[in-house]
Length: 254
Image 1 (cartoon, rainbow, N blue to C red):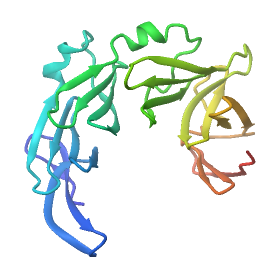
Image 2 (cartoon, one colour; image 1 turned 90 degrees about the vertical axis):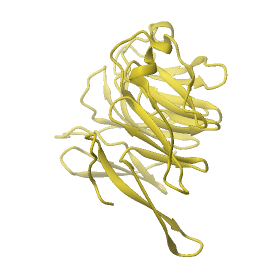
Image 3 (cartoon, helix red, strand yellow; image 1 turned 180 degrees about the vertical axis):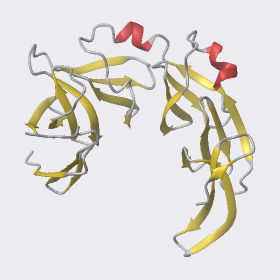
């Protein structure tokens, strides 16, 4: 990958196609930013703070672009916005979250804004005791919904009805968790967290999604560096790397 700056100042790289069936490198060079995702319809790149482009994976040709700074007035009145997370592609729409905490669906065919979660935070999240420390990042798409486990709350956002459902909240007044980093699987969420809304995560835990309960939690003793990386799972082993480079390994009995 050849990284460099484009003429308009963006950090870009050259992408190449490889056919695993024929073990051949296809003669196509696609240039775009490092924030990239693809599906069967094309490749999508985020440029800078607010622009997204679609390119053909067959020819490298740009098919459309949407500069949200020029269309933002169509779906939000807030001025401070950038693309926070490229969540992924769901059906015929690209899913984005913005720094305004809006969720946005963009057509994969035209690049036009299909919908936005108007006043999502103001209307639906005011009831939360603690702020969502992850700022609504790292959404997990699954079965037509987006799931979020952050702060002391687990919630879902229905992509068809645009309705928010609060699935679980840590109701304890003391030693309640504040989830900061997480890793989703079909049945579990493996997370690091702090206690009592502190931002320094020293706790590792496992949340069972079907039963909506914490099945295992452990506070790391004498941790020097915060547990700022999401836990990783391999078999029955749970791995967490702390900020000092020390790897913590546990048996994930669930």
